[in-house]
Image (cartoon, rainbow, N blue to C red):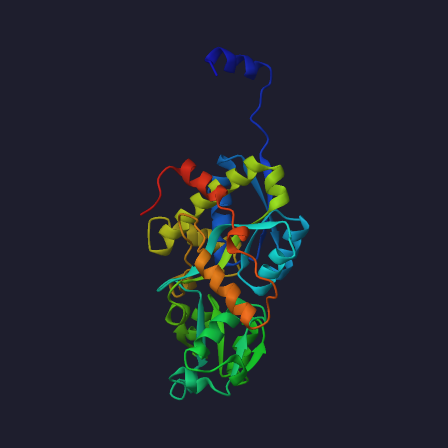
Length: 332
């Protein structure tokens, strides 16, 4: 636009285009950090996006709202419920990476009650023990299953109980459970309280491919009707991921990101961020399809997934590719 045309537009009351509103389901977890960073640092606004956060108490609840079209975007775990939703043809696609378990950057650990650390030294020592998991359809079931299988055991060889992470603290303290798979920040908090020790972390169990724990999912009906908003949201998201990754390894964004996390997440004590492991998100946004395929196969073997869906039909990375081009330079 020429200066003359710009002046004319201003005289006529021309205004910037109204931002596109994108509704995003979140749980207040550190894994949702890129949403919060993008809002706080203006990365979404810069791309013409106004993010409307919708708070949920469980990922299952958020996923149901996504499938219904009540929200547009959510970060969800790779679970039987997700595979079964794809099998039923729900309007959703995996569009970007969210949380991957890699050495030094894992949020999930098998924790053992502190008074049992001299008794439980290898996986066979878990036989007959009472082990807590957060939900029957959780990726943590897969992690525990793979750990036991490495010693020739199965899930039926232990006593599984289901409870939320906050309830595991009391269960460990009262000796109601012997072990559990726990996510950060509870891992750091339980260790700090001397009630349980981080005994094995996910990358000790699942190495190749690393476990893709959670992904970003779009409602496809919304994305098709609003292709520009879907692309521009991803650009803001991926820019935020890179701030988060810098902070996670002690980069210059660390202080600011911790400040944002204490504002938006359930962890208000800034000191705990120095004790816990931070989740890893691929700064290129690329989804680990081989890990998702392995998870589907495992859950099918255990009867929790009835119909196989080709992984390539679950994933649509056009939005990530667009964002990478907009951001110009991929990190090394």
